[in-house]
Image 1 (cartoon, rainbow, N blue to C red):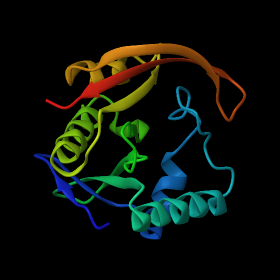
Image 2 (cartoon, helix red, strand yellow):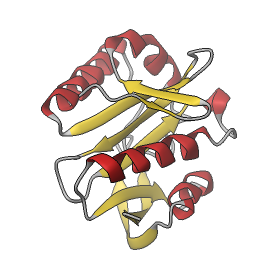
Image 3 (tube, rainbow, N blue to C red):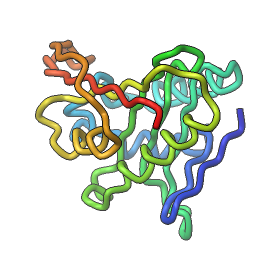
Length: 171
């Protein structure tokens, strides 16, 4: 699947090994504090994540994209719509620390939801987020997301996340 999504400030492109150094450098412990995955200890872990993501793109089960500033091409982070072959695909995003506070996450997620509305058959899109991640909670709320459930989950660092799972319905 070769999907590119452009917004006013961003270009979302399929993930590839071209971005492995950026992903490895920017997917830090600070960025992952409210996330299930942990930062890679070695670049080979990043390469494996990318290879798995590319396979999902080819199979049509996963839309894993890099987030770039559309004028400069600067790498900003990664986003994805996972399990796109199901009735409840799941959104995910991370933006590098130095780019926080610019609402890039909201812009990217809004664009993916619009793409999904035109291209996928689903009942709702899931957006799980840690209760304490206020900035990230604002994203599904801005899209009319409704809290469906709350639960605790252990992340890959062994920390407990207090998840709130939003459902974003088609408009």
